[in-house]
Every structure is written in structure tokens, then in C-alpha cells.
Length: 395
Image 1 (spheres, rainbow, N blue to C red):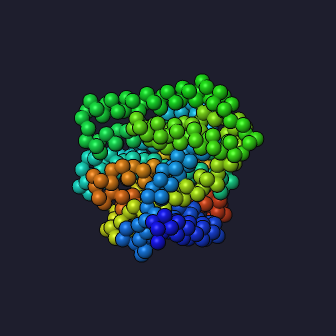
Image 2 (spheres, rainbow, N blue to C red; image 1 turned 45 degrees about the vertical axis):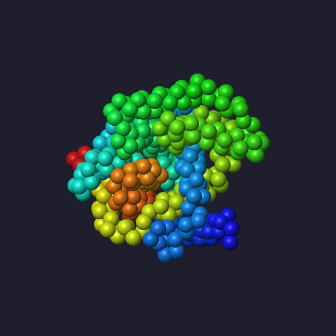
Image 3 (cartoon, rainbow, N blue to C red; image 1 turned 90 degrees about the vertical axis):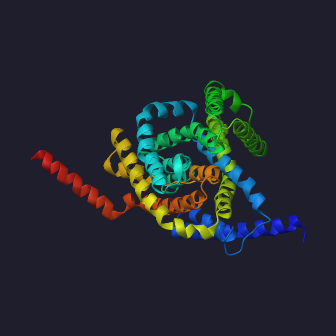
């Protein structure tokens, strides 16, 4: 058969399997991402039935998936809301970095992987999955909750921090000189600031380029602009995902709302492809050796994320249940962790398998614990503790 025919067959079969996995995840109330990762592992290197011909398709599709995930997240904000959130949660951002990046760096050094892997693993454990966290908020009906702005502010800070972190990591991995690295980072920072200024000053003008009532031109225009800016950002060593996020920030009003509606199916398709590709690119035979370290690291950094969210929500005046909801929602890792592992995989062969185990563990655990505050026993426990606290205060 022709190579193109084989690619079509492989892609069609895998998409159909992913559809069944999506239905299964909806039935059991889990995020489908772990199942997509497992599907990729099953059909990737060292898996049950490796698919070689379609790997290039999934690689390109995975890039589009990251771009759409972050663009759609950006559409949730206006530029003003972004700045307000950054000002309000700057201290929380520093706390988030210290509590969650340091354990990853120390873990890599304990494993004897060296400083480059330490920088990479710090990013893997630092960045919450914006896509999974946002999906959890929607699925659990918490978008309008009081703690949701706190969660989103931390996600925004992390996403912007990645704009500076990823070029630094890329320069370290490439082994460039200090001067070259400084120039790379300076250009990246300049590009991010330029896009932010354009979003703030000319967001309304950008939105006027599109007609929200015409679905087809809207899809083509928003997707085209997003991919164009993401690609240009990537050429100067800024994450394509961050470029896409900032395009989403620039769009507002009816255009942003309509774009969310028409692009959601595309986002779901290519985001699924993104997670499948990571599984395809990971050697399944190496996962067993990283199973215990990945789970241990996940347990440690889920705890630090919960502490981050709880502390930040408490400072914002959120009640006890909302504090726990904040911490649990932030515990999942995903797209950025996988992107970082892909950048640094060549320096440490075991980093990608560790990241796969780690992401799988945090998503599965995070999906479970995110529902804990809604259970009857949790509500009774919180209420009982509140009553005991009032009684002690009255005494």
C-alpha cells in the first residue's frame, strides 16, 4: 500500500480508539488524558503494536494541540484581567515557584542526573496543567466559584513564567555560551512584552479583524493568526504555546466568545493528539524503572501544590472548602511538563519516562482529589472543625 494510505489507516484506527477511551473516561468521571497517554504508549516505541508511519502526523498535530489549548485559555481573560491577576497574585507566584520547582530540582540531583536535568525537572514539577485544571473547573461546575479567580491568577503567572523559563532551558540544553544565552533570553522577554503591549493597547483593533457571526471566516482567521504568532514566537525561542496564549488574551468581547464556541471541537481533537503523541514518543519499556520515582515525586509535589493553593486562597479570604478546592485543582501537571521533558529528553534519557509516569500520576490523582470537597464526609468534617473552632474562641 501507498505510504499515505497506511498513514490514513493508522490515524483513523488510533482516533477511533481514542473516541472509545473518551467515552469510557466520561462514564467513569475521569479526565481522558491518562487514557490518551496510555494509548500512545501502547502504539509507540516498545508498545504492543507500534505505529511508525503516522508518527509525523501526530507530531505536527501535537504542536497544534498545545497552541489551541493555550489560545483557548487566553480567550478566558481580557488583558486588563491578566494584569489585575498578576498584581494581586505576585506573591503567590513566588511561593508557587519555590514550593514546586525546588523539589523537582533536588530530586534530579538526588538521582545523579546533573544540573541540566535539575533545571528541566524543576519546570516539570512547577507548571500546573492549565488545560486539565480549566477542564476540571468546567466539569465540576466551579467556574463561578469565589476561588476560581485565585486559581486562574496562578495559572496565568505560571504560563507567563514559562515564556521566560523555556528559552532559558533551551539555551542550557543547547549548551550555548553565556552571551548567546543572555541574548536569547533578552529577545524572548522582548517579544513577550511586545505581544503584551499590543494586546493591551490594540486588542480591540485586533478583534475588529474578525466577524463573530460568520463561523467559517472566524475559525480560519483566529486559527491562522494564532498559529502565525505562535510560529513567529517559536523562531525567537519563545514558547509557541505562550505566543498562542497571548493572542487569546488580545481577543475580546463577542469575537472571543464566538471563537471559544467554534474552536472548542478543534481544540479537543488536537489536544488529544498532543497527549497521544507524547505517549508515542516515549519508550514504554523504560517506564517500569521510573515507576517508583515518578509516583514518589508526584506525591511530594501534589502536596506542595495543595499547600500553595490553600495558602494563596486563605490570603485571599476564601473559606476552608474553597482553599482545599484551590489546592486540589492546581495539583495536575500536563502540557508544559511534557513540553519541557521533550526539550531536555536528549540530555537525560530517563527524563521522558519519568515525566510520563509523573504526569499520569498527577492527572489521575488530581482528578480524584478534586472531587473530595464535594463529598458529604468532607463537608461534615469541615463543619465539625469550624464548630470546634468557634467553641474554643467563645471559651
